[in-house]
Image 1 (cartoon, rainbow, N blue to C red):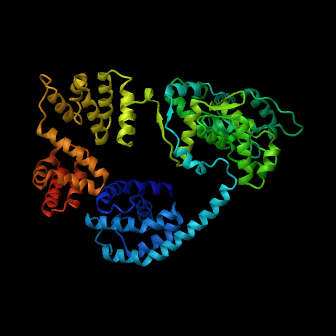
Image 2 (cartoon, rainbow, N blue to C red):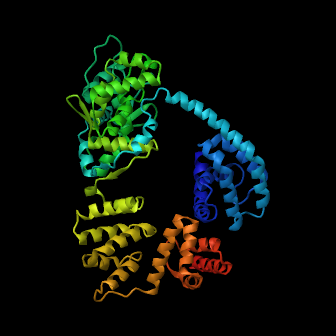
Image 3 (cartoon, rainbow, N blue to C red):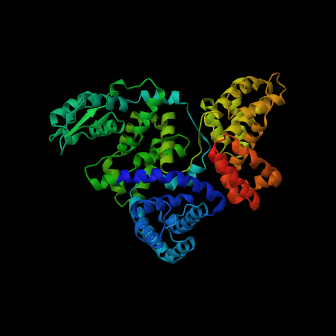
Length: 569
């Protein structure tokens, strides 16, 4: 089934991408993302032909199939039927609704007929989900959601350069222990079903990983939770992997840790980031253990909210109160654990995420990086940016595109202060050349480099060699009066117009139509006669969009003719 889903998703992807572009202009009130699951399961369960839609299939899809697979019942109740309506309209208007389908009017009538029942089904799912969520949240000290507003209100968090973070990760003791344990395991060690290792093997594993042997009268394997945490970390880091049969073996490059390449180091460290959960206290009573679930994450969240450091006693008091509030066994669990923060802090120290100075617990730069990733994984917004001194030109351009103008200007100014103008120009234009389909990055880069005057001339001259940047380079070199520089051609002007249209199309239908009105119907008609020849990444999408949204039918018709020519090249 997985293979079938992957094949169907691959077939659908181009059509859905075109629908999303169409929906921006024609159905801005719909959520195109909700169409994906419906279109996928229609393809899998009802029709091999993406364009064949029947009323009966539509009803079964929405009332029988979607309640079993929908991930967000609340969003589906509000938006799935309008989104499917928009998708069917898109298929009909673009000639993709196959002849064997029911008419668009009949399909829309079916959507009206099933609406009440579909919404009722989604509300039932939502009620069940909320009941389950209440049970789950009751014992979770590591839930970031209660802190969402506080996290969003934090000042900008500056993340340290990768080279600095990688060097810190190389020093993490827990990763070295996981490496040594994995190397001891070897290429193909047989493991048991009830306990992975025999007591004799456990004794050897403790020595290999540098852990002390516990004093115990029972089986050693039952008294070494830290060893099993290291074992699980080795699996998370992909130092260990399952082999054939009941075997597990070391990965070939494990013994090379710490790796030479910074990116490889940070990739490995991120693989093991969720091991922070292994820092939660483990008690003999499972119910008491569950009452303290998420304590390590809760500690990390509170450190970040406090600016990176807290007094240990304050953390203990706040977390103990939270445990008592979340679970009726929380107080008993806290008392039974003795010092619940000890294993959490020890694990975080071992993973390079916190350091302790007297009674103060402090996030390290690596810890800040990690907790920001954990918060992001939980879909919580937090303003975290690379440190200015380590921010690449592409990171700067991508970030600035999402910021208000004043903040973006401040980021650019701080970044530029660290570079000579000619070097800044070179880096920005190199970043803009990485993806010739990214018009926004290109326009931003050209705009900033355009403020650097004569210092940017060498970078502009080099940019003449890049087709996507040549129009900007020729224009600015001409404006600067550089001897021997080529004059901007008509094709260059057309490229600049296509870039601006691409950006306005991404802002929505009204913005795009407004940009067309700004240049006037006569000029638009003239452009449509020639602009289809430009080898721009978005020319076909833009011509298709103009044909759909332009209020003048003659211009829309001219856009369709131009689109046909562009597709014939």
